[in-house]
Amino acid sequence: MLQLQRVRDNKDAIIEALKKRNIDADAMLNGVLHLDEKRRALQTELDNTLAESNSLSKEIGNLFKSGKGAEANELKAKTTTLKETSKKLGEDLNNIAEELQNLLYQIPNVPHESVPAGSTDEDNEEIFREGEIPELIEGALPHWELAKKHDIIDFELGVKVTGAGFPVYKGKGARLQRALISYFLDKNTEAGYTEIQVPHLVNEASGYGTGQLPDKEGQMYHIQADDLYLIPTAEVPVTNIFRDDIVKKEELPITYTGYTPCFRREAGSYGAHVRGLNRLHQFDKVEIVRVEQPENSYTALDGMVEHVKNILRELELPYRILRLCGGDLGFTSALTYDFEVFSTAQDRWLEISSVSNFETYQANRLKLRFKDEKGKNQLAHTLNGSSLALPRVLAGILENYQTKDGIQIPEVLVPYCGFDSI
Image (cartoon, rainbow, N blue to C red; front, side, top):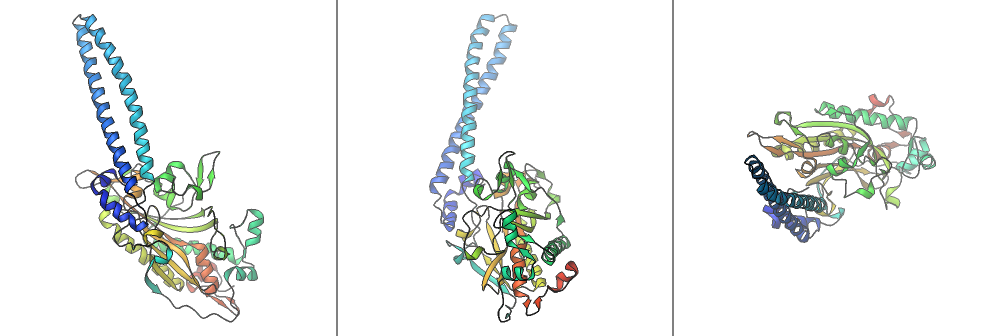
């Protein structure tokens, strides 16, 4: 959520920056400033009314002590009116504050200056590419056919048990899945991230804290009886650990990694591009989350990018990195780098990681602060990244490592799997 002071001081600059997202924010920001003026005027009126009421109460006490009961009773009638006025002003103030907050919730984060303008993923900027795209054997298969051939992932059984988008991993497929989770967690903890296990359901406050609500309400599974949401990513519960916290500056950076299943309705997703593991309603992911001092957050973001690079190098998968354009940028992000692995059998790039800096946007929603050298509370910066999402990594391994004799396992995963081929 944008800070009010930032909107007051930089309205025109914010409007111009949000044009990169193809958003005309003029009306929304003017609405914010109008409500803010009304809120501050009401607050001033309420403060003055309460001050007058308190002053009269003291005066009434003194009059009673002086034996001037008649005069005191006249003033008591006035204090009754002031109390009624202050109650009404308080209600009006709460309503305006709620309206203001709801409007602020609708305004996305301001893109970083390096974010390119653009409307769709076709306008994203490729900034890095590494790895040789292998030449596959004649008759190479896409991963969903390989999975069926080797009986390692059963998509039809998932449909029977739950529905489309909920695969069942079997035998060496399940072991490879578990191996990837362990490998990713080990790489992250070796890099200094503390492993954490978090709930897979969150309350509404957590959804608002990291910005999934109200923006992506229709994409989250909602358990209405308990008013809880299945998590779309570990980012939500991990980052919300620090909601309403003031952390010590010397504790920064705070770095966590966690494995969770992720649940996404993906409403409206259909077609050939969602076949197999390409897009699921339930999938596994290992996440990295950082809480940083503002001046360090972009250095930290670069470090996260290098960290994911190193993992993909060890897996020996061809990949590229995209800087997302304004039109493809997530609602809460200031800058996002997407990693894509090349799916050789499908002849297309598949997104397997997003690494983002949210600057103060999430922290302002969360009220996540730290004390600076002067003892003043400052908003922290939050960052997160997939390290990594499993389905498309697994798809890339199955397709890029297939041979006439089966599927080879990347060398770095063999100790985790206990086998070197399928």
